Length: 578
Ligand SMILES: Cc1cc2nc3c(=O)[nH]c(=O)nc-3n(C[C@H](O)[C@H](O)[C@H](O)COP(=O)(O)OP(=O)(O)OC[C@H]3O[C@@H](n4cnc5c(N)ncnc54)[C@H](O)[C@@H]3O)c2cc1C
Image 1 (cartoon, rainbow, N blue to C red):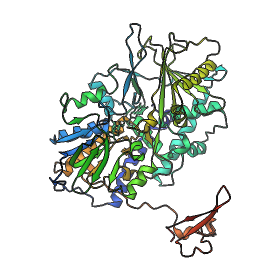
Image 2 (cartoon, helix red, strand yellow):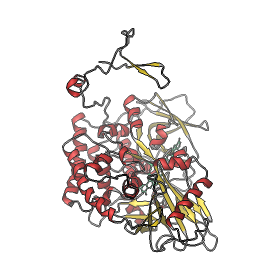
Image 3 (cartoon, helix red, strand yellow):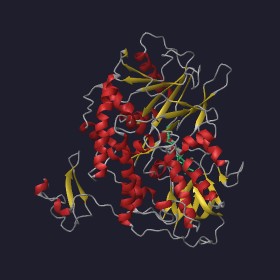
Image 4 (cartoon, protein in one colour):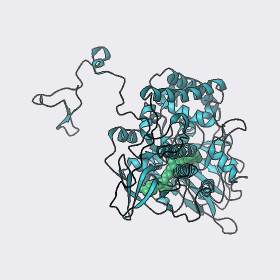
């Protein structure tokens, strides 16, 4: 994943950008204050025997998941001398969606290590400014990473090399307007819109031109793993600004042969012992019972854990798939936010060849398919100096619908498609068959069900706060709960730390979270729309009653009759009629 919207806004005035960042933070504070002016945490008494007859293992805090958020939450607890915790993890290692695998082989026959999930330190840092914590940890753990030069790109279409680099300049110009419009929407509390609408209002149109679509894909979809029409104009812009302007507008790519998650293992080693008995690997959580006195976690192997508090760091995809049964069922405000936010899929398709048949000095290759937007649009070489030189490894990236599509087909089918595209890009080259070929299937993966979250158009900050908020003693953390950096590793890190500190505060420790507080989160049980019932009137084009009552159904609260596709009548009952 690499920076997108930031790329197009480099020309925007720095002061404006910083004011947008600051306003974003101020707005968060103001909204929260408006709802809960006197919100302060109170340390609750810990019920030491919530399930007194149980044979479950007991702990103070159960941390569900050993990805960035889970490990960081546990570290925050340990830093406040809460060492009685258990970390329950599906996999056999820490790292979660920061996961690598062996691929292909070097000249000596040894496999390379490539990253299936997170790969970039997205937004690094400046010596005097705030630094992305992942960049800090990468340096501290001597992670091997290389500057990823997004400008080192060549453009192609179905006829071969085709120079449409000028479209990047056009995008940049329109993007400055787009960012300013997003800032106006935020500061003046206007209605959000889709990123596609923001682009259009700023003068960028695809005009059914595959090359323009390829540029748009590269800047928007590639980073968000979703289409511009799915994304919030405001919160796509803030997330990008906070990462790339607050830290630094550059990306480094991990090529560390210990794996990118080395930095997290390095952090974990500061508070966990080798083979620490508090780390329960290969443990799949299937049920969570929660109340205001404790939490009980039940696993697929029949084991269980009782805790005073739990921090669930499972991905939004896992929560949406209802892998875990919550008892009592999650309240409506929580379920609504889980279903409202989006999880995109991002797929890297790795290929090793016996030669580098593509331009050896280029890092990126953008392909504009003549008929299908997002069809194998991007290739990246790992064979360059600083990456895995001489490896002859090239990988393609697809996202969203194209990821879903290739996940449902065989490796052979996908390989044939990719090779056909490469044949179009390099028509005068004899392209050898790959000696190794592999791609992960994130959307089908039972411990992720997707790659990372996105913020849908028209979705408020309060709706997001409900995604973060705890239910009784069950807390939530992870990349998706970060309002500022959702989708990124550093989002997961900040949220893990905040949740660990929040629970530590609830357990009577000093609250280290500053303004955001400890103990219970602010939450919004009912989120209103903008149109009052009385405004559904002729002046607004709604002269007919939208809650039409059909004959004979007067006793119903409200009924709409509609004709189904097969010509039969079906009735829809509207319970919420006012
Ligand atoms: C393909 C891809 C590319 C990405 N690229 C980048 C990038 O370049 N830069 C960047 O900053 N971010 C990137 N990300 C996003 C980044 O990986 C995530 O934001 C981050 O890893 C999320 O951490 P987390 O702790 O919130 O969740 P996770 O890493 O998902 O951790 C949750 C843990 O819970 C475990 N779990 C799930 N279900 C269960 C269960 N039922 N029982 C027990 N355990 C369970 C999982 O195994 C997992 O270890 C990428 C992600 C993907 C998938």
